[in-house]
Length: 299
Ligand SMILES: [Zn+2]
Image (tube, rainbow, N blue to C red; front, side, top):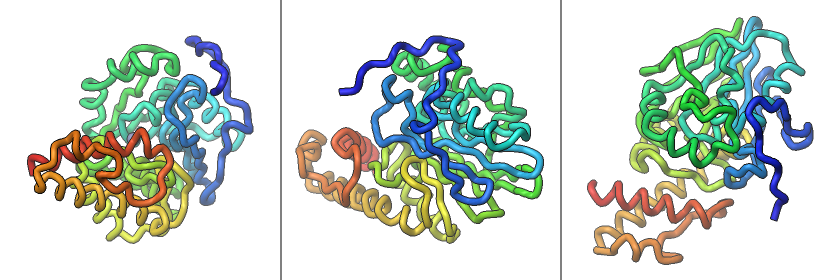
């Protein structure tokens, strides 16, 4: 059991210690911080997802500020150790608090960009997330999750100076507001939570939709990927375990439904195979089964 840290007060300039916030230059000018494989808690400052930034010749794009104001401020200080270029873009990959609860720290970014359904998602869920994660946030206004001035309907290309990023708004998958970022210079897809590595994928949008999105991404043959959780890697290494898991989930839940099994029967331990070794399985697998069951029951 970790000791409880003092409550994070508004306006605090506290940063995470250097060793607690590793930063990797995965590709030239593309920096990734890999969060811990834990639940989102005050003890870990909500630092459980991947955040980072891409540097061009004249500006910087930040991708996901992180799960708390402290984590986001730490990211900001890391950016400033590396470059003085202006932060022209804050890109919010989807509305999950572990990725965006620290967004207010980057309120000065010239543009804040998100999927066109992001604002609706904030309207639907911000009260719930603020109640749960107020200790991690700088303010208790829905604006703390960022205020996009640019929304992506389909796709959008931004230029950081000899460095074009292609942003794509996906159909419902991990959530209904997933935005990916492709760095053309390094052929790296920042997929965020469309790809989970090591940690069990968390289903919040549509299982069938997510499998379709994976199919499309796979056809594009991206060499490298930055997942939303876990280490960046070659695309193939990252996608296969998740694909197995989601396909197995769909197949087994569908079969259980056609066999007339109730939701409580499919939630019995071992009823639905969790396909592979996953961290945080105990908390996530049953949530995924429940969501899959509700979705597939109507298919
Ligand atoms: Zn997510």
